Length: 154
Image 1 (cartoon, rainbow, N blue to C red):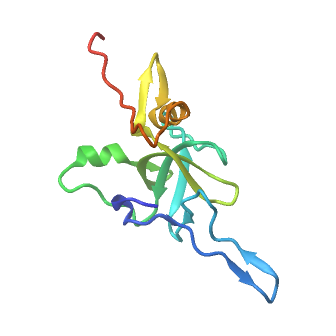
Image 2 (cartoon, rainbow, N blue to C red; image 1 turned 30 degrees about the vertical axis):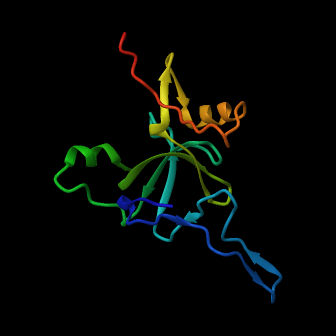
């Protein structure tokens, strides 16, 4: 998992290894995760509004920090300022992804914040909405996606 802005890999799942001498399994991957951060890479899960760090297994905005994070977009300080945030002296890249870290440090992606719509003052996940709709139709016959359209009357 990663982005061009994080040069480009931030976390990986590696093969698990069995050490026969000590009967130990070195766990380096978990199904459903995008792996653990690479050495020198930090991952922080924060509240998307306050940037306060969230607890283990709590979904929030994924930030990636480390020396490999880009300096900025060429000739576009405004866009750079939108995605780079300094917290405690570390530059963090705002991935726009929603996810969590588990108790072992494995990262899970659950959604994308750009795939949300504000309806009646509440943030609704378009991905979660698609999952609910798919329960009632034959997705082998009908292909669909949800989109948010601006209410022109407002």
